Image (cartoon, rainbow, N blue to C red; front, side, top):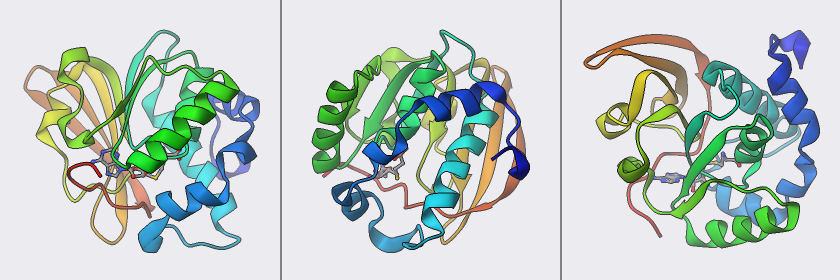
Amino acid sequence: MSEKGITDQRVLDAMNAVPRHLFLDSSFLEHAYMNKAFPIGADQTISHPYTVAFQSSLLQVKPGDKVLEIGTGSGYQCAVLIEMKAQVYTIERQNLLYKKTTQLFRKLHYRPKKYVFGDGYLGLPEHAPFDSIIVTCGAPEVPQTLLSQLKIGGRLVIPVGDTSQEMTLIIREEETRFSQETFGEFKFVPFLEGKK
Ligand code: SAH
């Protein structure tokens, strides 16, 4: 992975520590990859971990950071952040996936600080502000709610776009001033409203 430009050693160490195959069974594929936003095929097993590494690097997680993740899915990204010693608050909107990943976290002893079945568009105002927020589904636009739940200096990593998404990093520089940078195209399943 380092040859593809991921040089953050803490991210690489965390990814080496998480048994990725246990997060990728058929049931996860059925729910998390529906709508085929990820190409199902050989490429998937390569591009997906790269995306996790890329987003994790942009977050610049420090031990003890409060991190909000939107789209728990398989729990893999969450596990990587836990290995990086973040306190992870994570939200999933699909109940079947939520239940399944609850069991997996239990089995593998990964403990998110909070694991919520709900709509990520709302964030978690009762636990805000966060050091960083990672959105792992493709957002048509940047939700203001999430921006408002960042600490000053906090980072939001969010793929923005409809059919494909531009990886976007937004930093809350001051209370009402945000900076923004983009990092190329990715493909995610859509960030959908509500829960089911
Ligand atoms: N981080 C996950 C990525 C899974 S794919 C992993 O490591 O496996 C993205 C996930 O975002 C899907 O599980 C999808 O159900 C979820 N999602 C989409 N819209 C959402 C919303 N509004 N709130 C919470 N989760 C959402």
